[in-house]
Image 1: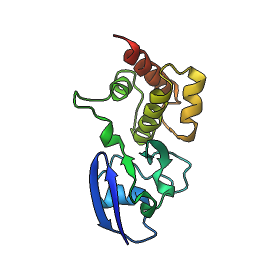
Image 2: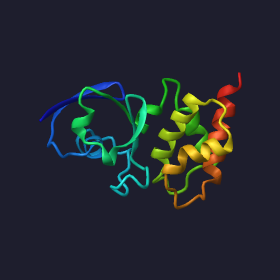
Image 3: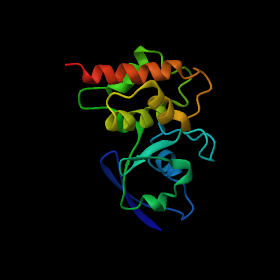
Length: 155
């Protein structure tokens, strides 16, 4: 079946198998390997992207479901001025180690900050509760999100 999906502002038309998952369209067809494929069951959250500005786990979304939709991946976080503040904060506050969960964490945290510019630690932990990190114990991830929130509020 033919689908057309806009990814990070660029329209793509592809012939796809009806059972193709969005994560595989992004990685294998479009070469956007920032979206990680981890568990295939929606448990780890490494594959989180936005579809029509809502976070979704792309390992449980069929590519056909993205037809006519707007998808944003971690590659789309960069601004014309450089890295998104959240990406900078993850680097400065050591919010990543192996980096496998980072794309999903960034997409989820960016959505949170866009909807709640001053989230509490509890709100951050609740927002990222669908993301599995096996390295950091979440402390530095929470610190990174708080740092980004504070930096974005500063003049």
